Image 1: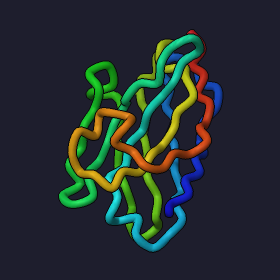
Image 2 (image 1 turned 90 degrees about the vertical axis):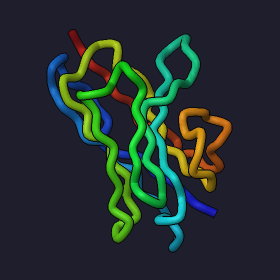
Image 3 (image 1 turned 90 degrees about the horizontal axis):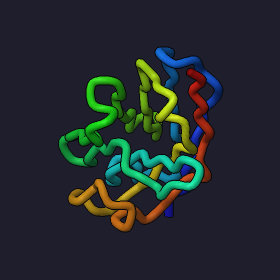
Image 4 (image 1 turned 60 degrees about the horizontal axis):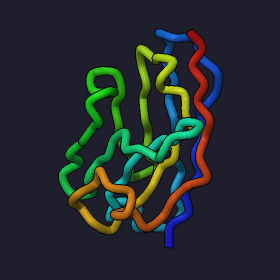
Length: 124
């Protein structure tokens, strides 16, 4: 079992940057694909980015490509999301998630464990 705890959210002006972190418990973090999802008020949870456990292949939703970077440090059992050029539409609760699968990582149902989320608010 994996427990996930996000941190790094906050209030930022449009155009600014934030880095989210997700600390994972357990000794098998490196064997999980990891993802970031977000949920804005009144909207469904949506995929943001993912990174495979094997080759570290990364995937992004179109709206964040070129602005967000997902990475992982297996030695520290930590997942990151560097968010640059933030926009008001990035405002949401951001969740990290762990998957035992290494495919179809854009779908929430592929993930087995979820964190509690961290709020990101971008003011325009």
